[in-house]
Amino acid sequence: MLTATAKEMGKKLEFIEDMTTDVDAVQERVLEEVLSRNAEAEYLAVKCGLAGATDRATFRAKVPISTYEDLQPYIRRVADGDRSPILTACAAFAYGLVLAIRFLQLSWRELADDIEAGALLTTRRVADPSVREAVAGVLRRPDPELAHLIRAECSRPRDGGDCWAGIVPRIWPNAKCLDAIATGSMAQYVPALNHYGGGLPIVSTIYGSSECYIGLNLQPMVDPSEVSYTVMPNMAYLEFLPLPLPLEDTTEKASHHQQQQQLVELAGVEAGREYEAVVTTYAGLCRYRLGDVLRVAGFHNAAPRFRFVRRAGVLLSLDSIDKTDEAELQRAVDRAAALLRRRRGGAVQLADYTSRACAATVPGHYVIYWELTTTMGGGAAVENDGETLGRCCLEMEEALNAMYRQCRVKDGSIGPLEIRVVRPGTFEALMDYAVARGSSVGQYKVPRCVAAPGVVELLDSRVVSSHFSPRLLHWSPGEWFDDMTAEERPSTSTDVV
Picture 1 (cartoon, rainbow, N blue to C red):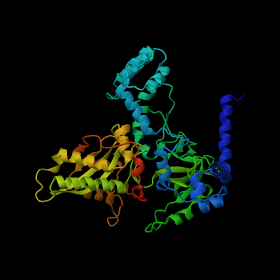
Picture 2 (cartoon, rainbow, N blue to C red):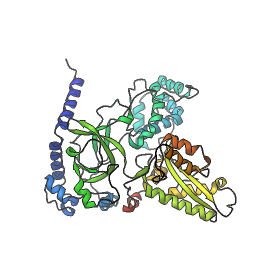
Picture 3 (cartoon, rainbow, N blue to C red):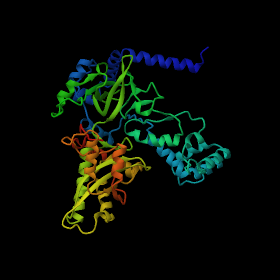
Picture 4 (cartoon, helix red, strand yellow):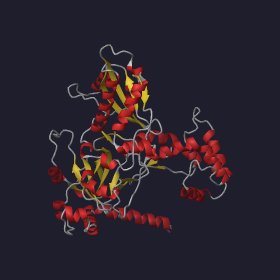
C-alpha cells in the first residue's frame, strides 16, 4: 500500500510527464493566459497595440524583443513611487551558502551562547526588533546540549588543524545534501562547498532567474558540472535566440529585426546548439532577453534539457547580481591607468592586464593582474608605491556598475578589488602557455578574464606585489536604474580562458 507521501510524489512525477509530453500545446496555452491576464497593461495595449489579441501569430508580429533599456521608463516610474503590486523571488545560490558557513566561522561562540540561554544575549548582531522577535520564536527554550555540540565541533582541529572540514554533517548530522545553485558563475564555490560538506552531494534543483522559473533538474544527484535543467513549459512562454556556432561567420551583428525573425519556439530548439533565452512571463514581461546562454543537452520527452553556459557578455561575477562585461572592465582599467600616469608623471604605463573573480576569500573579490612598463628612468619601482596602486584599485571600483558598488558597500558580499602587479614578460609567457596548448599565434588575443587553474597558477607565480582598495567606494540607493545604459549592456562575445 502506497503511503500518502509516495502518492503525492507519484502525482508530481505524473505532472512532469504530462507537461513535457506536448510542450508546444502547453506553451500556446501559457501565452494565451499571459496575454489575457495582462491585456490592459500599458506596454501591451498602448506601446505594442495588441488590442486584446492572445494568439501566437499576432504576438510574434507586434511584440518586439525587449531589453532593460526598453523597460527602463516603467522601472523608473516604480522607483519614483508609482505604486502597483510587485512580486519578488530569490534563489539559494552556492555563494549564499558559503557566506552562511563563513558567518558560522566568525560567530559560533555567540551563537552557542544564545542557544544555551534560549535567548538573544546581545543586540549587536540582531538590532531590528521584528527580527529579534522572529529569532526568539526559533530559539524558544535553552538547549545546552546543542550549544555544547557547536562549541566542540567548531573548536576541535581536524585534517591537519582545520576545524571546518566537513562541518556541515558534524553539526547537522541529518543533512542529506547541500541544496544550492552551483552552476554558471556559482561553480567557483563548489570546492568550498565540498570542503565544508564533507562528502554531502551538492544538488542544484531548479533553474530560474529574477524574471521567472524555467526548469527543473530531474537528475539531482549528478555532479554539479554535469547538471542540466528540463524546461517546464507551464512556467513561462519561452523563445530562444540562436547563437552562432563556432565556425559560423560572426563578423556582422544581426539587426534587432533580424534577431526577432530568428527567434525559435521552445519546441524548435536543436540538440547541441546554444541559445539566449527570451521570456514572456505571467507578471507581464514580454519577449525579455534574459542574457543567459544555454546549450541544449538533450530532451526529456519533448521538453529540452538545457545546460547553463554563461551570461552573455559577462566577464566577472561573484554574487550573481554583480555582472561586469568586457567593455565595462576596460573602462575601469583605463581610468585607473590614467590615474597611474598622472601620479607617476607619465613614467609608468600599463602594458597589459587580465582579471578573475577570486572566491578563495570570503567575501570573494575581483583580482586584476597588471603588467607595467617604465619609461624615462621611472624613478622608484612602482610596485612599491602602495598608496598609488591602492588608489588605482579604488578608481576601478568607482568606474564599475552600481550593482557591483551595492554588493561592495550595502550588501558586503564582495570584498575590496585587488591589483596584483606581475613581472615584466608575464603576458608573453601567458601567450606561450596558450600556444603550447594549441592556440594560433596569429589569432591569439590576451584573455581579459582567466579561470583555468594552470593560467591562474602562472599569473600568481609571477606576482611581485599586491594592493587593495583602501576604503569603501561611493554608492547610493536607486542609482543602478540610471547606471544600466545601452552602452553598458553586455557584449555578445568575451574572451575567457
